[in-house]
Image (cartoon, rainbow, N blue to C red):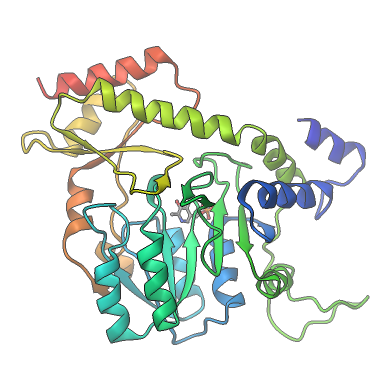
Length: 351
Ligand SMILES: *Cc1c(COP(=O)(O)O)cnc(C)c1O
């Protein structure tokens, strides 16, 4: 509220201003990214990441199939061709072996790699494949702000990374996103495209088409406030995950793995129901009867009608995860009573 009040007091509510710059500085300081650009959404950040890295219409762009559609729709915005890669059992994230085979056959320009529910994908193996075959790696860290892979923050390891501050993410600006990159040229190009590709002259001069994608100074004020609690949020989400794991450890339930060398932000506590008599829909409805919200995992992109014609390299892993998986309530504000009620309700489903 102080950041927002300050913006009003200085009559600096839009478009850019100190909160935008301050929020970008906060993200750089927290993640170690060299450059950060505050934008209107995570989807917009991915759109600009593709364009700023030189991906063009007709290029092939690979992507994690088990993800949210905002991760991959930007591929179609630019007229590129999405190719979906399935998950592996070990991480639930993109399968490096499948990727290697697919890259060898398809020679894609780029890969959009999702860190699912805050858990890092196998960045070492995937990064090695991308380096070897000259594939531009874009990290979709929309869900994983605060997650660490081998001492580095998710989002800062690829050629570019994005975060989302949509209402459901670990921190929020009510809506917003951030593009980060170690390359100043990429950040500068994205910044230019995010402000209608306006040339730096006094009048309105445009030699190409851009977008209206910048974050407002008011929303960035929310972001600055949220950055003060990000570490607390990560700690709390990890506590919630640990609670579920110990409270439910005797049930036929599997918890989303955290691959070695990584530390998840546990944005959402995701589980698999390993009992053929208990469907995810039955579990979801049993929780809903107690006014407890839960959701199936993302439905894989290769199984979506919108992508029925898209190429895919699939093994059945993500479809199996979708069939058996459930995201449990994971909000940072949940108290011990909420957690126990959720755990007891799940326990009763198996009785
Ligand atoms: C939320 C999300 C996005 C999109 O972010 P928005 O800010 O909602 O546009 C992209 N990818 C993943 C994996 C997400 O969860």
